[in-house]
Structure formats: C-alpha cells, structure tokens
Image (cartoon, rainbow, N blue to C red; front, side):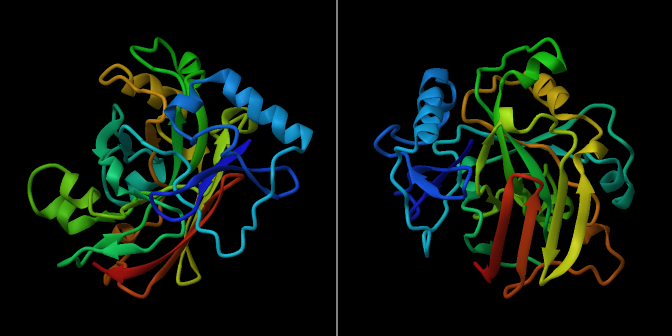
Length: 285
C-alpha cells in the first residue's frame, strides 16, 4: 500500500493511493498514519480490505498539500557515509561501522514544502536518501534478516545539510543537520511487502532541472537490514521511528570548486524508485 497524509500542516488526514492512482480518504477508518497504526497488523489489514472492496471515498488531489507520511515521529536516525561512491567523492575512508547521528523530528516537513536556507548559510547541500519506517519495536535485534521484519515500509527523505555548520563550526554534526525544514519526507509510505528488495532501488536528485545524483541502494556499504540491526544495539527503535540510510555520490560538497551549494530560488527535485517524488523551492529563513 501507498499510505500518505494530506492537508494543511498540523491538520493532515490519513489517505491511501489505490492501484489506479486515485487518492482515497482513510479518516473514517483510522485516526492517522503513525506508530500505533504501523504496529497494528489488524488495522493495516482493514485498510487493505477496504481498498480492495472499493468502499473508500475518493479525494480531489487538486491543490491538496501532501504532508509527511508519518505523524508523531519519535526520532529520525541517520546513517552517514553509507555509499561507497559518496565516501570516495568526499575523500573519506569507508567506515568500519555505520556512522550514526540524529535529526530532530521537528525537522520533518512534507515532500513539496518550502526548504529554508539558514541565516548565515554558505554551504546548504542536498542528499537524496531511502528512509526506513519502523513498524515493530527493535531492541538488540540479532540478525540483519530478522531486522527487516521490523520495517513497516519505506519512503523518500531529503537529508538537507549545511556543511559549514556541520564540519567547520566545531562539535558534532548536529548544527548542520537540524535546521528547520531540513528533512522533507514522503510523499508515500510504501509498505514493506511492496518493496521486495530495498537494495535494488535507484535514487535521483535534480537541482534546477540538472541531474546531480544518480545512484542505487545496491551501492550501500551497510544494507538496510544491517543498519536496523546495528542501530538497535545502541537505541531502541519504536514504531513510527525513521531511519535515513545515507546518500549516493553527487552532493555539492563533492563537486569541484566553486561548489554549487543551494541558494534561495533554487528548486530541488528527488525520487527513489517506486516510492514517489519530491519537489522543493528554497527560500531564505
């Protein structure tokens, strides 16, 4: 299923995109798309049955905002340097273990919402990523294979980053990763049963119509199952938590000088195969 949330920010309603591409209202069936729903197999089965029966009312998608596909996210866990080509382009060694950092849940916005360039920013960068949404509590998971059973589904993430804040201003990466609007998510949460191999997905990103990133999850250093297993050794993952699994080569930081960092007025578009497409216009904060 392709689950999503539509409406004005803070007042989104749950919806599903059926096989014919029609947007259907779920608000009479479930209160929202969140961890409670994603951990409830019977509720998900009810949605599948309603979609199959064709009883859900259609929504007019014209002018309707798409919000983040998951509400009340507990935490956003991110994996840095998780593609061989991205590590190479930034001149860094292949990590021996996953590089883990956190983004605050309040950085998450809808897939087509405005992204704000922070005040004083000179190096705002783009990163298309496959995002994993947790559906079962994951705590000390023993194997990568078992870890995949804890995944509710997948979506598209834009891990926007300010490189000067991240790398040159001291401390950890937090300052460059947690600026407002720095994690557009969506448009859909595609349930795991419709993504048989998360290591066989293409990822692309364009800036002002120019293709910048063109990669595949097959190039990940640590595949999805291993990422979930590894993270569960250090923190408990709860239903509705999100993991951004890293970005392929092609970011601005890896380009020759002068590096084409983002500015107000730029338009970024990105997609992950089968998971939908995002589009953001950048403005000054």
